[in-house]
Amino acid sequence: MKLLISMMCLAATALAAQPAPSPKSPGMADQTELTSQSFVTQAQMAGMFEVESGALAQSQGVDAQVKAFGHRMVTEHAAMNTQLLQVVGASMPMPRKLDAEHQARLDKLKSLQGQAFDTAYSDEMMKGHEKAIDLFTKAGTSLRVSTELQLFARNALPALQQHQMLAMALPGSAH
Image (cartoon, rainbow, N blue to C red; front, side, top):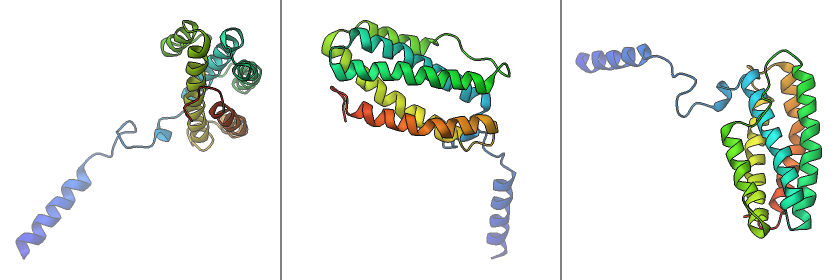
């Protein structure tokens, strides 16, 4: 019995001595990694993509609903991007052009025509808004995101949720 108790104490000591999981460990909430700067970078990148792909939808889309949605994305995401810039001011760097991932996605859309474009654009809008809703939800409660950016994220969330609902109704949408 003493041996069993000793082994249990040893095991408990060994477990207690293990380092805490790092914030980037699998299974940890992404919220621990979100900072004001990472939120701003991701939000700005997504917003720029929405504006550029929305302009593309207006010129390359064939369905009137896709064109109208593209127009709405240009208008509303440009406004969100402007609001984000006003909140951030000169306090941190903001991306001015798309990163390689977003540019590749935009280039793919540029290469498509007709119904193939409408379907790919609809898919991008659903996936993109799902990611944006997740990002803005986390930013709205993250202790590592400034109070001003938390407020911006919470205020922008209803529009993003509405965009996702509208994207689900687009022609060619998988939902």
